[in-house]
Image (tube, rainbow, N blue to C red; front, top):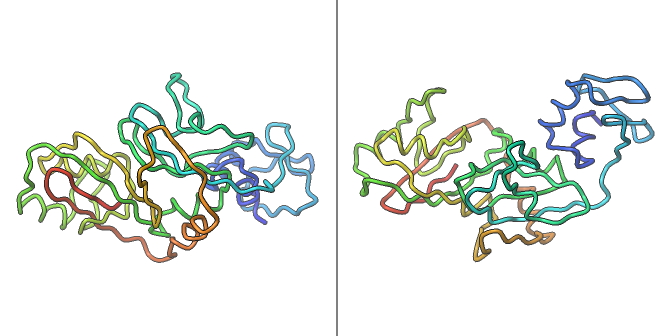
Length: 241
């Protein structure tokens, strides 16, 4: 198994974050510092992170959380803000699957399964996320809808054409797209992640996913070429990202 995948399966971090940990020289394998995330490791190898032994988790945990506004989507925060991980008590290390802006509310997942996190967040798998946005200057006119469907030029590049769907996940993308067509978002809530819906889960609350829900999430990603779409409507609008 490749080292980054091994770390992810051990619940250290997502696969991409595990790759950065390896490149930073924090991992030793049988006493040797390894900086190549693709290095193969075997079950009997002695793998240490910052001098501490790690091994694959025996229990996979996945929680759905209704993130309140003001809570950051990290495991820890240097500014002392509340984190989404602090909302769930667990003896095993958990980390968020992707992120929501501090002022965005709604569905976010916590897990110790790095492979699942990778499958749900990597753009190549195109797992859709649906948001409910409240905007200013409603209703949205035909010109704004046409612009969103053609793609919006943002400071980090042009968005893909949107149909109510946005497969891309750039930073604050839904807010920036709506702002670019003259309809700033005043409230944004994620209400669906792949096949999983937020439902009536209260803000700040969480629940573990059932086995069937985890299986549905696991099969939600399709390894295909990256594409995009997005949508808007009136005062409250649903946008897939």
